[in-house]
Length: 286
Image (cartoon, rainbow, N blue to C red; front, side, top):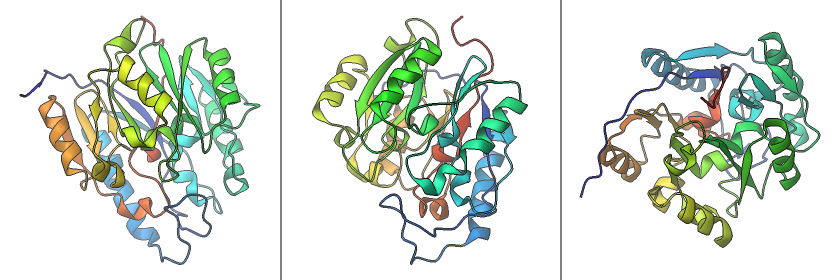
């Protein structure tokens, strides 16, 4: 039986980075194979379709300049985490990405954010997702548990720690998508998320089942297609075209799936959400 609900598109502000220097020259996740050729021009074309789709939906998109020698900078979700005009910067696990830290911190500072330099290893919105007045926080492969404590201190929010166990889903945003965050106090109980159960340990699966009983549980095939690395504005869900089952689930719930192919960027282990950092400038608690 359909559980379709009338959905409302909510304005979003995003930070993106053109993949002008995209290539796969090292391997820091199971998706990256340096021996497989990459096509930078194709990556740029696919990225442009995502950018254009956001603009067409009425969203505001800011750009950070790509830096030569930093091919993963296109994955801006890892470049920080913002709430209420405060930007918590990244501290990458792998040295190959450490050069991205200062450009993101500089961008935040130049654009009026109160910028916090982290002391703990974290990879931004790749592992931190805002739901209601709580932060879902991933660990297991990249961001550390100590960063969960630090982000709680920075933002004064409840942090719900979730442990990832499948190396293919090394960031939280590859295994869980926030479809409707319902921002503000009490919102976490009314928010809608989707997740891949097998990407989490048993404790985390229990937490998600208890806190989000109406969540969309996505099949393994759709998770394997990077379907959960999706961006939602509350109505439109920008999603991998290969996640057919997930798209049907979204449609049943009243969302509008917008399929976009970022297959070239997936060679670096990133998809739609990885290329999208949400900028939350105003107050999130009404």
